Length: 377
Ligand SMILES: *Cc1c(COP(=O)(O)O)cnc(C)c1O
Image 1 (cartoon, helix red, strand yellow):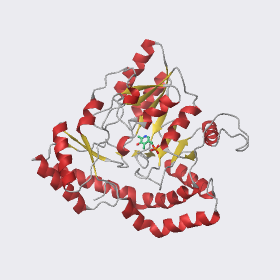
Image 2 (cartoon, helix red, strand yellow):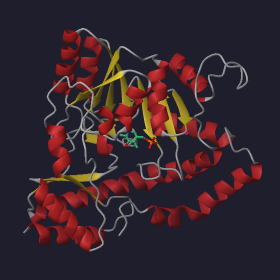
Image 3 (cartoon, rainbow, N blue to C red):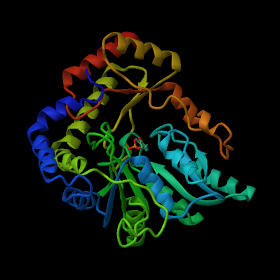
Image 4 (spheres, rainbow, N blue to C red):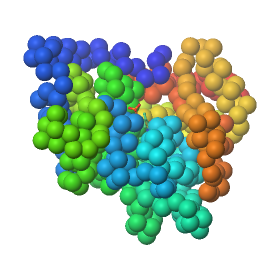
């Protein structure tokens, strides 16, 4: 069993992908070819924003947004304590200070109460200027943007949506990657919409930021690549990756997103039916997840270890997302803590992500649950 079965997906899409890749190679327009512009158009339309800029990877996409807002030394940027390292890494990379915020136990997403507390404490200290919050759509579930937007408005913060795992999610009819003032997603192969290497996109409705980011992506270009009006970076999506993504976006829209949600619902039903002592993912009313990960939670670390070892023995892969909180990472060991980080550390000890992808079969899921039942009872 595969944790995320990219081989099955390729078998299904092989002829279309092979044709698309061969066409790019024949045209030899490997950088910024017409497939890139076409993909950007399709992505912007799908998400429901006016501008989409593709880039080299999700980490760059996040950093480019912070650079567009000229965030740097002396600025505080708020970020969940329970996420992939890159969400916080980019803050430090531009010279600003990451301020870690606790998450909710129910959805694993940013806690609005903790965010307010952290902002108030930064203001009370009077050393840093609160500038932005990076809200992460963890495991595919959009963060609570209604609450986050009202806090951001009150304190004058930009919202950067880290939709690296969120692409395809929704709140009501509004799609993930449209909630932030700027949003970033990632096309890393195992993300909800993945390419065959690194890739990403930035989304915004703000024309000025979009143009600025387009310039930053290509060495701070002005009129062209050899006219350089600011310091930027080299962060573009390869034409081959764009061609692959165009095929995959079609499958994603036509059936993959629905299939992965069917698989998630099946797990939840199976696990609840077995009455195992584990917490299944909570999707609040009117929220829709892209199911980037199916992550359950056990009562304690010992139980999780027992289950994970049992699964491994039967050849079933599982992953711990995430093993460490941000504030426990060595890279951030000197970071000052501004609010109580209670749930993030507890989650790291008790969560477990199970095999999940659009091509997962019911019998495979039954097998996963049976093995878990054996080791839990
Ligand atoms: C994967 C991921 C990123 C980084 O994306 P890359 O394309 O790997 O650079 C950032 N944030 C989150 C939450 C992620 O899961």
